[in-house]
Length: 489
Image 1 (tube, one colour):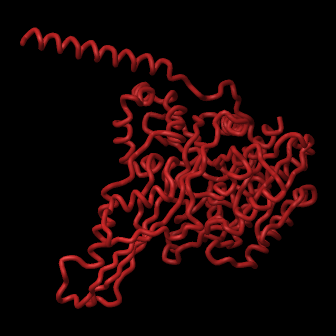
Image 2: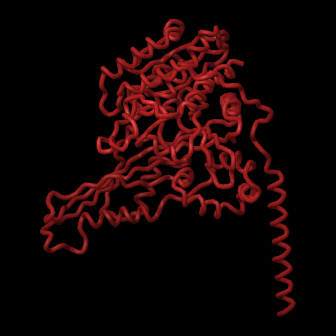
Image 3: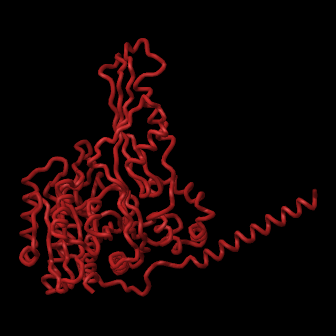
């Protein structure tokens, strides 16, 4: 018996040595995917008039859920009055009255064009939260280094940043080698049906395809991941799908609340929701998330580098740690979010019917239909009817765009020129953008905003005190200026 124990110990020790050896080799071979020898450019200064232009754009309340035609016309007037050379030299097409396409003709028609995107609509401000703002959300006010207001982050900053860069380049006499298109939708916050979707139809009707498309989505984030000391610049190479399912509990009998049966429509529905929340979709490390880890891992401190270099062994540990962070968890699984409940007509009447809406953001590899099937399987109750709430506006995840394409490489180079300290990596966008409509006109769709933010800034998106620093605004204009130049080489 003692000999057997010694033999087992030696075998275990031998196996441990082999595992450690494999881990060391894989860590040593886990080489950087960052492009080297890129020098930071000297940023041109932010002019006072550029600040005024963004402030003026913020002062026009182009609110998405209540289209005010006068506000959108005022915004169009502002663009035409402010960017004179853009409107004199670029060809402009109006789509559904308030969305716009600009074409900047290049010198080499054999090259495929590129497309830069933005949207003019903004989300409304909750009236109950107005007194918690540090400035008028539609005032375009500046306090120290911050310009406040709806659209400073999402997404007038992109439109104004692009047009500021273009106007400057036109004044300098710059001519791109390839055609440059700008597409500015007006209803992204309400699913883009009359903006982006119609713009894409125009492109399809005119047989236009793009070398790459750039939309909003990700950014440069400080302290993005434990073990990564540098800022992380994430380029979205895909985005999650979107679906809302309605769960309906339908019982034969209602009755008086003084004599409740063991189960009611409300309790049956509540049980189904709890079951669903307690059985989340499995976490996966593949696709865009795997690509993120491959690009970030080599830049981490040695302990974390070792973990990410050996996912074959450490994947479970990494999943366990990242699952504690809602943002990190969201890039690895389809998320489940109960958002609305309805049932009953009076507090002392047992309803026969109760319903709930559950919102899902779907990771690549899954579909709207597979999500529905998963929900039905987990709940496993024939009294619960599961329906897709709005099939027309439910979308499967976007296809993965290449990290070896011209578009990704030129974005990576430009980011390093503007944000030299950043680690650049592909990633998954967990929200929905207008770019999901563009899969029919380009194989390479990327989602990145040239903004460097802290984690605490993320709550400003759609939230209280949406604001952009003037430093970030300067970098945004410089980024688009440099991106257009780099795309013309």
